[in-house]
Image (cartoon, rainbow, N blue to C red; front, side, top):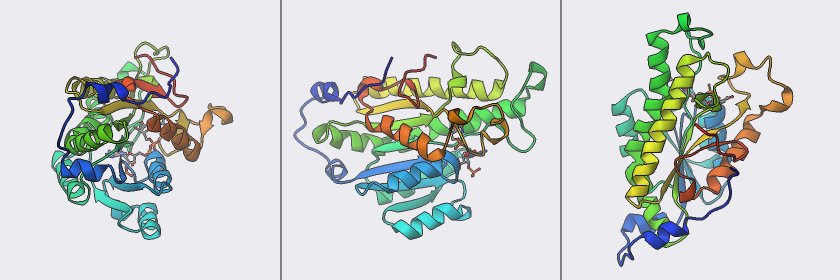
Length: 287
Ligand SMILES: NC(=O)c1ccc[n+]([C@@H]2O[C@H](COP(=O)([O-])OP(=O)(O)OC[C@H]3O[C@@H](n4cnc5c(N)ncnc54)[C@H](OP(=O)(O)O)[C@@H]3O)[C@@H](O)[C@H]2O)c1
């Protein structure tokens, strides 16, 4: 099914008319705030770069160690600390996530867009499994922790700010707040024809399920927070580097192109899209 522009009018219609809008919600109408988790490099860093090109956006960039990312530091110098807030957040550590959420809440009353871009496929001593006998508890746990648990715990911590944006959006722009969790087509069970990559595939299936649960909960509560998953295609980053040999050049996207395509999707996301996995073309990927 092709992704199409559908504004969240049905959400506006289903919300009880509210005489009072909170101060946070009123402020939320003024400017848009986007947060990118996993922004130190790769797709996350490019999301930050492109979002900063939008004059009406403030950007929060989180990663494990912002002071270690020269590129994030350069972007902050270029755009100013009021446009780009750098916040340490380790998605493996609940306390770190909570602290980050508190820090962001002192700077911003709302969040219009939350992108979870962290992810792991290989690491020191860890390569994607080519067969059952290569599967270890260590790789299963690490992939699940970074690719699935980290994303949903970040969503949990930032949900109040997303809800604040949703309240204001319903009253003004009729646009939902958006959560976009970076997944991958290989997480689809129905589409799995090759096998292998046990830990990575399973962790992506897990983030799909966790995001679907969250999407249904926001919808049931009539909170205009649309939660989608994105498959970026194969993109030239550290994550794909060891596996690029057999990828035809036209199928290996630059980070610039991949993020442009993904932001085009998040810009058009309505509540009707919530709970689905979209590929870079905007087509729904079946589970
Ligand atoms: N590139 C592709 O072809 C492709 C295809 C399909 C899906 N994706 C998905 O897109 C997302 C972004 O991938 P990418 O290509 O941009 O990858 P990348 O360039 O390798 O960047 C990975 C990001 O995740 C963080 N990260 C890595 N290991 C971590 C750990 N153990 N704990 C916490 N954070 C960790 C990194 O932070 P540090 O700098 O602190 O390590 C970095 O910000 C991932 O979810 C990936 O699965 C990518």
